[in-house]
Image (cartoon, rainbow, N blue to C red; front, side):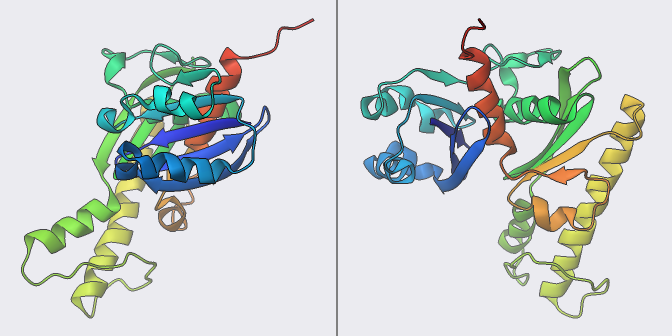
Length: 254
């Protein structure tokens, strides 16, 4: 099995995969990765499975520094990190490719492989990101906006009276409490932002039936009210890492 790690700002998303698919996923706090307990959590996640390879990407250099060395003490197997230099299956048409978050390249790779090009991926993480692959299977850029939790937490942190809220579905349009008003603004307002940005991307790419994939923590909640989204794929980034591995370790054809 291949061990996959997507190291984000808040969580490390873990996966184990074979040549066909990601078979299991989990997560742990990114902060734990710099401590011994982080490796213990990864070891428990893997369990008794035999690890034959490692593939990872990271947007937190501090957390991933020395990661390959530490992991290969546990599993002395081939390893690869997804970067703009190692990615295969898409090309990059971007002024400074080294500045692209590798998780965004993993998402674009998986979306293009399974849904074709052009395509768009929306990743609902700490920030919400849109990543665009054009008709020539080139990653051409995207959009970054504040994440849903970031927006609501900011309102709580910067005001004296607004509470911290739990984000959940609401059908109301006029709030009858501060909590409900914030929930309406977060959900309906956020969906409006996503819908507007997707409309502009469809126009820009001249593709009215543009495949749109969503992933990340709030993807299922937000996309319930967005028929413009083709599919929610919880394992999209991990699938991109799996595809990276297979593209570098395909058995020779007879």
